[in-house]
Image 1 (cartoon, rainbow, N blue to C red):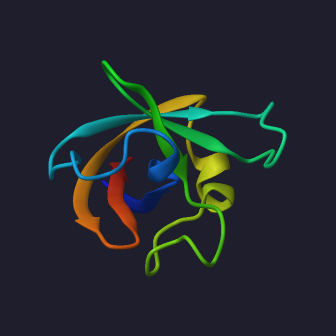
Image 2: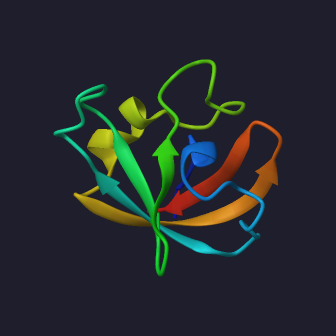
Length: 97
C-alpha cells in the first residue's frame, strides 16, 4: 500500500487542534463548490463535523506532504485519513491506498 501524507490546516476557525491525537480517523470530503478553492478538501470528524481543510498552499503544507491540489484527483469524493502527528503548523495525517 502507498501512503500519501497531508496536512490539516484552518483548525483555528473551527474547534482548534489540541484534541487531535495519533490514530484518530478523519473524513476527507471534496468541496468543489468552495468559493475560494476549486480543489478544496474538507476535513470532518464524527461528532464535530468540519474541523479544517487539507492544506493547499506552500505556506500551510507541512514538509513534503501532499497539498489538496496534488491529492484531489487521487481520492474519490470522500476518503478516510489517519492522524499521525499534531505539530505546531498543523495536523499531519496519511491516507493508505
